[in-house]
Length: 293
Image (cartoon, rainbow, N blue to C red; front, side):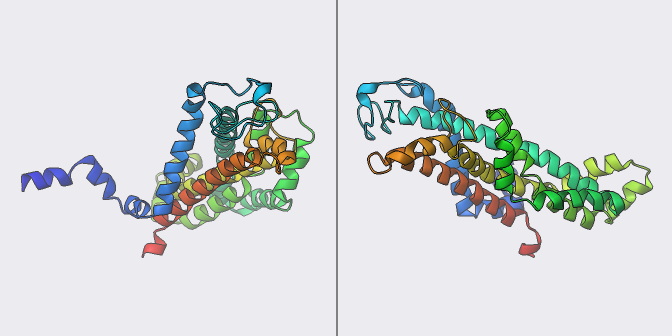
């Protein structure tokens, strides 16, 4: 009996006892997504140090080498640069831009959403009209328009993507806060004389973290696609710095003679975006109490 009790009280057992964790663990596609994202991050972080060539090394004698040629595991590009090295360095850039854009957009969207939802009235209406005004413009066209007027760099691309990604988060958070602000714990906080800022940050924000976390994973997926799209069109990360988008841009004229130049970054983008979407779906299912009665 004592052995059984000790097993039940282990931290791992307590962690898995959480209903949301159990539901997430049962979501196989979400676990697949976590595995793929972890593998991608590790490969991009460590992989370039394990390869014999860096992303800028040019070997004109090895131009258009197909995958698995010598030490060029994924082949080479038109200048003889190692595709594997460029792919992993590009992954660093694309993932860094996507995660940074996600954090910025979550901060902006959550701040506006929680303020609009808590105060309501004219303040809430004015803030949500600003959100609606941004949503009136197709985000990709707004993104390309802004990109055309700036000097492309990873930092500026991050800011541009974040500036077109926060509106849906604001709407989600505002709706959640409006449904929570009349609950007993918020009414009690007001009765104790706590400030609106305290109530928003200490009482309401923790209770809307579920939707925010789900939105964050989906925002990363959209940010990866947005970066790839604008880099593919020539407005994003500029060569010789690689990104998955500009690798696709450089490969389009060689589709017939060297298809791996487009297939490899295309597979990386697809895998990353699909994995983050799977994680988002799993988190949504795990954190949605209403769907589990």
